[in-house]
Length: 543
Image (cartoon, rainbow, N blue to C red):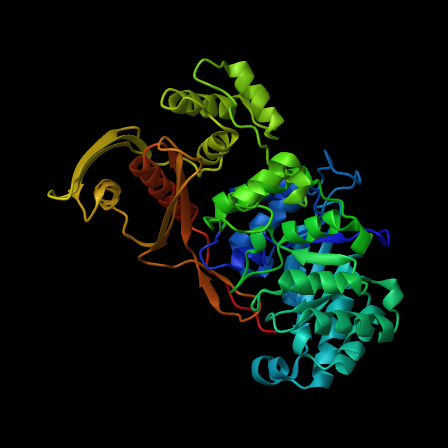
């Protein structure tokens, strides 16, 4: 059991978060995010849904094996618990256990819907059958693993009296954590807080388990509902970075943690999170998933600590507390402006990287980032921390290089047809070049790349943002593509429906056309790398 004044952070970015449309991650990306979650201080990492596909199973297994034992930098000195999701049947549970068992601390998280609408229309079972299935599933999970979490799916729309019955039986069967999900984001804070209090008060054996909350954001109330649940006695919050997830997303980790940190007089609770790692983790997740963080996103958005109104600026200059309830440094956002210039050396660059939290980069990664830094420094008078963040994202958070971009030249204008020529190095080490026309310079570059690589795909999303201010700002491009012939999918655990893969790409440069080309090639390299692995299809399991 945890300390009664500590809220455990259960991060499901790699499971529920990855169910966001277009947020598909490969194994190496999941591993890197899991390592960062450990540095962040996450207590439990739900690494995936192992039955969904061979790729998902392998990702969870490797996270358990490689990230599970890590303790460096963690407040409590304990390794992160690695959890795997499983529906309430032996096939799913066995698969989840096989995936997580190598972690020193591992958990099986099993679930079954309890609302009448789900029982009738999805599961097609009655309440008695539901209770029996919960008992069998939790008992079997406990026979394999000492740490078992049970979730009554769609608890927010379930009959509270029936929930008490189900949860009481789950405790008897060996559940150690009971998670109450507002699966469709239906409840309001008053309702959800009341439900948690009612369940804790009336469920037999409630003092023997940790109570958890898992809220969705369909009405924009996920964080408010989660905090209401915590006020009512829950001591585990299930969250994702940047609030990503199905539909409108999940409760955002950064919002819950900083609410508890900033308002101690209101909650009198703490977490094991190192808040200075929040921004870095947020940016990593955004880069890997291709899901751009909205500018006005709480805590981690570009405008979260920006002050434009004259009255606000005047107050900030006099005392930052006039308009800031927390300092940017507390979430890892460094406010220094001029960092390094074109005369700065490799040692100064490495020191600055360590100050920014990138202390685990090897010499090869530092050398690649330093090369890009010098190229940008030649074009800009001042290189800021934000520029360096973009460089790291573009150099380090990239898939294996199959095709490499060597040279781009474009011609365009309002009275000419956009034309692009591209030179690339192929997987065989040979140089290839081609040219193409397009509706614009970026389209022309993409058409030329397609002619060289010869892989058909469909561009589904394109965005470009300036990292810093000024005409010489570094631009970050993010795209998503679908393969034209889609054969690989994972399973959505709630619906059993296939979720087809999309591939995101990220690129950064002071030239927006070059940034766009880098992002496109990043996505193509991901797609080609996955094809080389040739993972099998997922096989739906019967609940």
